[in-house]
Amino acid sequence: TGFSVDGIFRQGGTESVIKLLIEQMLAKTFDPTYSPPDRIEFVHSLAALFKRWIGSLPRPLFSFISLQQMSYSDFDSTLRLIPQPLYD
Image (cartoon, rainbow, N blue to C red):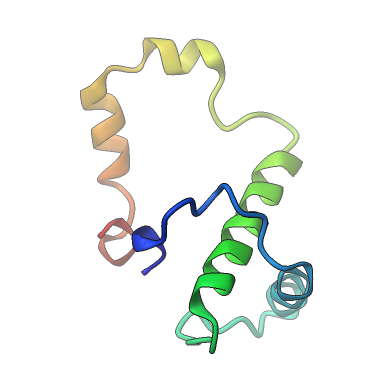
């Protein structure tokens, strides 16, 4: 899985793969069960696309103040809301 890849958000991914992912998602043809030939490159490209999406949001997901006020148990509870296949 992507969680076992070192430096998942440090490498930028491949622009051609990122563009392909964007096209597939916009056309609603993205297959989440797809197993690409180069899984490491795919994981980095998917992570790069996710970072771009977060950066394009009009407001931050978390403000600095809300993160300071969040306790570990609040953060852990929020993570537990992630569907199990994505959390493992």
